[in-house]
Each structure stands twice: as structure tokens, then as C-alpha cells.
Image 1 (cartoon, helix red, strand yellow):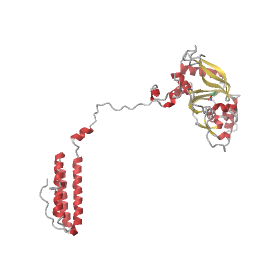
Image 2: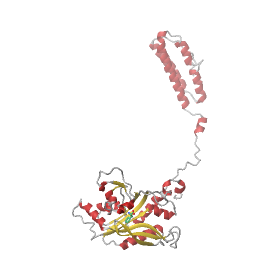
Image 3: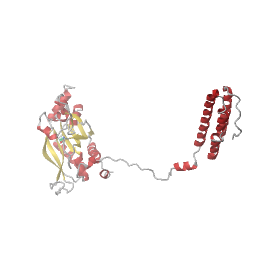
Image 4: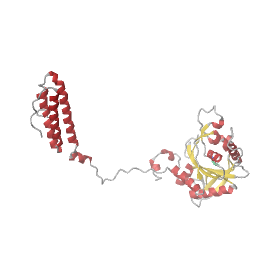
Length: 375
Ligand code: PHE
């Protein structure tokens, strides 16, 4: 290390100052380059920056303080630059090798187990919905979707609920505000069922149609153990030549057996929907008591599960009217040539029966104690 004393200055002119400071910087750099370990670095710091014996302190007393006033500024700038260089060299030397203690503090024990992130799982509603869809996919059905914000035309009119028809009141519709200036047909609402996608599918696609439509629907229902203003349905539509009510019965009987077990029985009760004729409600034998009667089936032995029926010719007429706006000769949905059936089921209700869930609210609570039961 350099320990020769600070030399006399050759003069206060710029070239002399440059030369003198360049020599010092050179020493500082070559000393710093040879530093090894914490002790040497500390010695270097004392040697150059030490308050009393440091070389920079010497430079200050011998050169700066003795300088004539007109040279002070120029000297001062060079002094500050040299000091900054030494400090930087020190920082580099210190940063070059962290101490063993610092290393130990940062060390990771690679034999410790890692942080396990929880894996997500399908929500029970999604799961049941997919299960229903795959039962029909195996029968050759494809999957369709449609918008949740729907027009009056698709949700009601095309499904044979004419304006002012009392059946509209049964749907407890949530409507979008400030639509009064639009024609009724175009007014927006939250779809009350997945049936509008029947129309959306048929206006684009000629028979044969075999489609299931899983999706979210909305009704202005108060929440209780079995009702929620938002719930899910799976719609089904099959249109082709010679589709009969026995096809409907066979298809749904098979689907119920696939979902609830092969010993489940089905029965069809007369019902009413504007878009099917005849219409039926499908009941399955109670899966809790096997049909003997229990609290779950209100001692009837049967559980009502879904609505269905043969597509009403009025729906085919509405489809034809729409298709003729594009091709005036379209006759694909002539009810003399083709027939079809449709059905719609509530996903929550099916999931509740599958898992013995007594309150629909559990599905939407986000409570992990509930969700973790469906890993
Ligand atoms: N859309 C009816 C409902 O939501 C269910 C249904 C669908 C009935 C298809 C018959 C045919 O209640």
C-alpha cells in the first residue's frame, strides 16, 4: 500500500493540479485493486479517508488550506472528485464479497418442504352442469350458448309468449332500465331461461338439430332454501324428421338413469309451456327412499325435476319467419315435415339432489368449508 507522504504541489496552474491529482488517483486505484477481505478493506478506508491520518486529510491540509484564494475552487473540485472515486472503490471492494455471516443469514435450507399452493377444483354447479352435458354429448348432442342479456323477442316472443300473455308473468323477469323508446321486440332483459337459444340455434342451422345449452339465467325471485335470483339451466333441443314423444321419453329416461343411477324410474306428468305442445313435467322416483315416501319427496315417492315437451308448431313458424328474412323460400322448419322435442332442467336442483344439499345458498356463499367437500 502507498504510504509515502503527500508530495509538495508543483504549482497551482491547471496542468500541475491535473498531474498531482492524477498521480493520487492512480495510487488509490492500484491500492484498491489489491484488496482482499474485510480487514484489508478497512485498512484502505483508514489510509485514505481516516479523519486524522488519512491521505485525503493530508491533501486537504497541505494543498487546499495552503492554496491562494483564486486556486481554491479548482483545487476543491479535484479534491471532491478524488474523494468520490475513493469512496466508490471502497464500495466496490466491500460489495465484492459478502461476509460469511451475511451469507449465512441469506441461506435457504433446500431440504425444507416448499410452500404448497392450494389447487382449485371445479365448483359443484360447474361439475353437475358438465356431467349433464356429457350425458347428452354421448348421445351425439353438441353444445350451444347464447347471451345472458337477451331481447324480449328471443326470450319471449319467439318462444310463443305473445305481448301481454299471462305466461310472461310466471317468469318474474328482470328487465334492463330505460328501454321504453325501443320497440318491445328489441327491449333488453336478463334471460329467464335458456330456451331463447333454441331460436338462436334454429335460425342459423337447418335440421337435424341436437343441442344442449348450459347457462346462467335470472329471475326476480326472493332467495330462500330452494330459490336464487341467479341459477343455471341445461336446455335441450332435438329436431329432425319423425321425432316423437317416445323419443323424448326414452332420451330423458336414459339421461336420468345416467345421472342418478340405473334403478331410477321416470314418469311424465301433463304440464304447460307456451313453446311445447304437449308439455310435461318429468319426475324421478325418489333417490332417497327408493319411492317408498320420505321427507325429501314429501312422502310422494317422486321428485319433480324438469320440464319438457314437443316443440310447438308456433315456434317453428317463428323460426321460419326469421329464416325467410334471409332466404324467402326457406322451408327447413316446415312442421309438416319435421318435429322435435325440447327440455330444460335446473342445474342447482339436480346438484342438490345428487349431493343431499338442503340450501341452494351454499353454492354461492364461497364458504371453503362447503367447497372443500367437492375436491
Ligand atoms: N324453459 C322452461 C323453464 O325455464 C323449461 C323448458 C324448456 C320446458 C324446454 C320445456 C321445454 O321453465
